Image 1 (tube, rainbow over the protein chains, first blue to last red):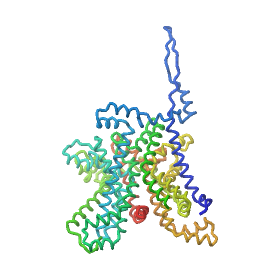
Image 2: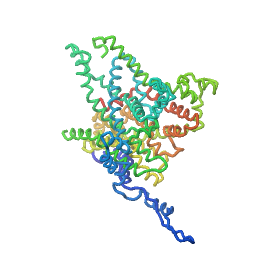
Image 3: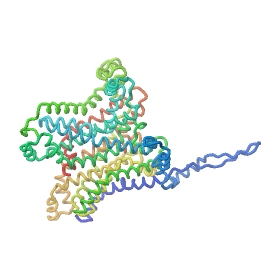
Length: 340
Length: 293
């Protein structure tokens, strides 16, 4: 295909992506080095018969005018990146010097909002990714063992947790684990503590979010593994059986290696997806106990004062994180392409 | 592995059966529970006294004279004007699916037929775009959209969703078009067709299976979106998902939670139908990228 023809076919999608993905990234980067204007302060002299006092007041008109003229704010360079709400270098250094031990250092770091969000995001990713892939694998093996006729309905029901809107799926679970819901009541009964509330504890909130994540993403792993299982070479399995390989050996030495490329693929996709965990935190109303990077940006953008610059700095850092996570895949693709 | 000679031992069958039943309960029960509970009053669905009230509904019986009530649905759809949100969702979803498939088929076709290096790099860039959390982009939209008065309107949200959807659409459709033999359109070109005529008369008639599968995923993305629609739409233009979230913000008065519960059921119902009718396409779409590698 010639360049001109390619361009004509590709122009609509290129324009859309350029305007609404590439330019916003640039806009975010620019926004992140500007801070909102300070209020314009003027000195007012109040004179009374007993003498004059000087006081300061906010010049509302001048402030408004300044903000309208330069909506971006004032240039501050990397100051937002290093402030307390983001990378917090000085606070980190202070924590490093003052901390009595690794545990104390960690708890000091967890008081810094950006690191708290980063730690939750990485924890969520580190648990949900392998758990959902493992659960999906077991379900796929099980479904593969039942009669063909039953598989259709089973697949239908298994898909539901994944297809349902994340915000909605998380709400459904959230209502059930409410202390007045069925799961909440069950947990209270199990723990023998009628006042136990899953929402009040940070650890339990994290566990709840991870359980939701596993529930909603394992169907994807299930479907991919199930499709992979259909392509396992039958004759290899049969010759292994003739050679006396046990059931476990067949799984270990034939099925698992066959599914290995799929597993790598799924890890890549799921790490990407889990890194942007967001909706369940909104549904679980869990912002106080668990903030992901996405939720951190969201809470900066919402609310009374829109902290655009702070949100932009977090966004740039998050995009950096995505690139780091993607880099192994990118390097691999690049090498393959270089060889070809 | 069924019918492969060796019979599974009974204990293994038992374990497999138990596990499968357990999994199905985990997958279905939350939906069934919420559907059932959406016809109760709040103090039955969230019962302080006894969880089983959500099943039997004694307070619903006392308030409405029957163990089932449509009060939650009535309140959400009529009083809180959920129908308006549903209408907005419909507009957004139809537009997003149509536009992104139009853009995506053209772009995906070009990528699949180009032998140049840049086609590969464009796909890599699309992969990076696909990996970025949408909220990071939203924080880039807000200030320009305010300045240019684009904020709050449905078309803005639609075109943003189309753009966010493009990387995925491109990947799926490129993979699909690569499976359509090049000889088809090349022979049309030899017969004197322009590239567009070849696309129009040869590719379009055979591309529908791939387009339908990709369209399903575009539909899901637009329908399920919360980030873009919540941040970029004004209150009267809200779609269903941000509307549900706004019910949660105002749950102080009793009964409002049931508005959220009933609208959650209303939002889930179309998805059930979608999976029921398009199960095969969804499964093939999910596995397309993976199984081929």
